[in-house]
Image 1: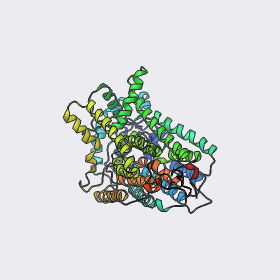
Image 2 (image 1 turned 90 degrees about the vertical axis):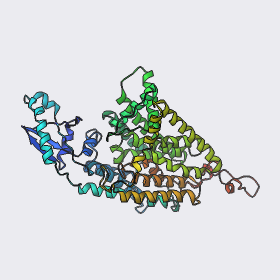
Image 3 (image 1 turned 135 degrees about the vertical axis):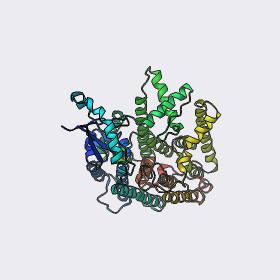
Length: 538
């Protein structure tokens, strides 16, 4: 009988026999030696195996992707109005989500050595003792067999190209969103009761999957950093390349708060539990933000539930549901738009987003122009307050001045924005060439200057579309995974897709021409943005 070790030679283990089915469906090198079969898979697949399973469902499986796509089309596609912007947005979003998942699963990577083992059969097989002795033999075979790395799979390259291409289409669509003045109310194919029923199990299953999986190492490092903040100790965990990395300050503050709560409850040594709870709380905050905007700004609870359902059911959400760094920025930005009428609160939320996502810094000029002179003072003051808290956090976890400065530099991740590196494909990505990054970076800064300098109508719909477009372009030249961080802007994109007319939703300090407007009888007009006289759908 053929025996297989399901254990990585590097030490990380696969959990469950169901992973073997995923491996058998791929063309990976298999080496047999001393009665043991070793499977050599790319490191990207090895890392993705930590989170691609949700209740024994392979998330990147074409069958599962097809079923989810059909469900979303059945619920959200308007068959009575085939040619509509809503249908176009839905199809593009589905294609983008599927392409991103397929690219992340089968992207180009240097081939690494992995061996698979069945721990249950080891305890029952009398020949299990010979398995460990064969590992050295498998390593020798691997060095011979894998002397020349495999070329990138065509599917991975095409998936990456499709993801970037659709992202560029979304940028164009968001740039001209202001011209789409017709916003008819398009109901979903499922009523509010049905959407609520669909929302509850979708949220429960996704969050249960977060608790059932092992938390990523990055989330655990954030929890350790939060505990070190409470103890005023320095901790700078090593990154994957051996260099020192600093967890984002916003995530560290949240982790410190969660750690303190668990300490007060008398529990200790539960870093994995805290990491899972932080992810669940981030998703919950994001969902509550969508529901709040749907009810408060869109005047429709059904739209809030619809956006939440679509967010939970998209494949890209399930694939990265356990990644804290993917979810926290979107949650902060969502609530920043929910609280746009309060510049101080919006400034705090954007400051927290900047503490997690460096690209959020580029949104600050756009929001400052939106608020004008008076509103931008409150907005800037709250940003300075958040910056002061971040500096205090670094000061409490630094041994000396050199460590303090080092953390400031590493937190901004300046090395990630060196565009003039060697002209090679970036790690784990088939199309991340330098020329593409430079072109997109130049286009990004041109967009930023144009949106900030050129006079535009100061209303919520322009602010929402422009902010989303900037984040979409920004993550396209992010070197770690071009076009893979969809959750950064997914909630904002959903708001753009489902929003009604928001041209009357202006900042709390309206322009002078609007503030001085009066009716013929001499009485002041009703403040802009008031829902009683706003036609949201036309």
